[in-house]
Image (spheres, chains in turn green, blue):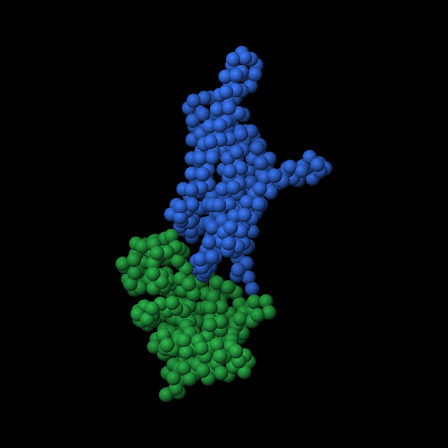
Amino acid sequence: MIEVKSLTKAYGSFVAIKDVSFKADRGQILGFLGPNGAGKTTTMRIITGFMPATSGTVLVDGLDIFTQSLEARRRIGYLPESPPLYADMRVDSYLRFVARIRGVARGKIDEAVEHATKVCGLDEVAHRICGQLSKGYKQRVGIAQALVHDPPVLVLDEPTIGLDPRQIHEVRDLISGLSGDRTIVLSTHILPEVSQICDKVVIIAYGRVVLEESLKALPAGTSLEEVFLNAVATERHADPAAAEEALEEVEAGHST
Amino acid sequence: MKNALTIADKELQTYFVQPVAYVVMTVFLLLSGFFFFALLRRFNVMLEIYGAMQNAQQLERFNLNQMVIEPLLHNMAIVLVILVPAITMRTFAEEKRTGTYELLLTAPLRTGEIVAGKFIASALLVLIMIGISSLFALILVGFGNPEVGLMASGYLGLALLGVSFVSVGVFTSSLTQNQIIAAISSFGLLLLLYVISWPAQAGGASFAGLLKYLSLPDHFGQMVSGIIDTQDIVYFLSVILLALFLTQRSVESARWR
């Protein structure tokens, strides 16, 4: 469903990601894991066609995101790092606008907006103004806009960041409820999140993929934490300071 | 085209919710109303003076078009130089700053549709504003006998001028994520186009010709004085198309490898 083929992105002399490849099949929830600054957001922005890669490509449902961009983008729902809300719009008219620009047929817009509102639990705030919502609701409106056109692929960039523990649980439940036929790629630096809702994990560190494994295929008895530490440790020699930061990230993630 | 209209619709609503539209329109109409009042007052006083002097020849030459409408249109054009950048500065810069740019660029929209939508909304706002100000002209028709054809030609010129300003403003907004930078640079560009013919007398004939051709008020002035020449209309349309083309390139460049 999604095939990332040896993506490299360089900003001048700084290489953000290097030769990143992985695959997610139909119906899979893929956890995209890595310390902050590892290149998660860059990769997701390339997958969704927001920015070009320096080399390599992405196939979404067999469509190349660069050469068949319009068709490929039609199949993706995307929640960027911060939910892309228009602060002055009401939630319902915002979702209606997103449905229209994402190409939902005129007659089906009401239905699509209603469905997204219900799935994301936004009924109470449907008439409120986006800019006045709490962080948790903003995040949920962000997820609602990503799935309003019922896309086969969802790309969610840190969907649970900045939420309180109860909201984190709600959003996780929401995401696992969304899977079904859908392919979901979600990035996070919180390990338990991956073991709870994902089928497959891809770990990225310092711009490289260090592990791509189905969660079931992990050796019995080993926790995801060990796997992560081992994977990151292999890259540690390259940059000791960064590895230490990665460790702190993991501990911070573990306590949430 | 449908997508462009969807974006235009949303943009126009934002103008009225934010409420940039009301503020800009109020300022524009207050200032033009003041100019209208001042010019009309001057016209009246002069008419009385010449009337008292019983100078029939001088009195003949007095007319509303030359003494009220023409200077009014020129004054409104200068107000637009200042106000249009305030309208257009948010079009792209705000989206970039708030992160909604990612939503627009990852949606299945062509770059041209995004640019067209933004342009249509801002242009409509400016046209609505100019449309309301045509009340002044209607007042003159009601209480005097100005030449309607001349006024129509002048207003057409003002509309073309306003829409050209919008296209330049949308372009500068697409270059930055800072609204103030967008506004100041489009203000600078418009002012430059406004005064560009000033050194024309100093240069040679071809130099003067070039500067005069680039000058906005020269083309606008022709239409205000009642001459609708295809050369002027082509000039305005080229400014609009060039600015929109550059905007499209600048937005599209985010996708270049």
